[in-house]
Amino acid sequence: VQRLPHAAEAGGLSGAPVFELSNVVIRALKKELGNALPIIGVGGILSGHDAQVKIEAGAALVQLYTGLIYRGPALVKECAAALRKSR
Image 1 (cartoon, rainbow, N blue to C red):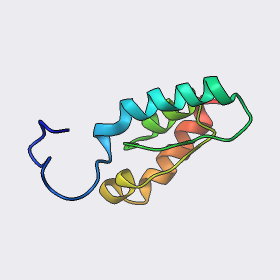
Image 2: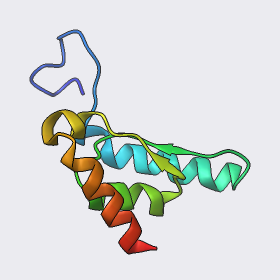
Image 3: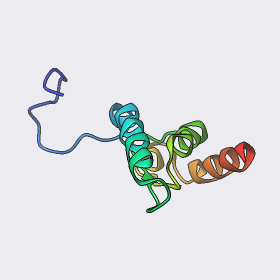
């Protein structure tokens, strides 16, 4: 993060920059917890495919935030369709 242009600014890191790291954490949690607790996949979900990747990593649910801001409510429908299709 320190190498990024806005590293010195206040605020958090979210969206696409945390997508892959979030997937690593989800996989580790799933391996450790199994089905003992539901895992909510977050971080950089900007498409239906991204939501599917979180589920495949081990998440039971996904949370949309950055993608919802940039893509609008149509993203919810896209994610639902992608997840239905992958069942």
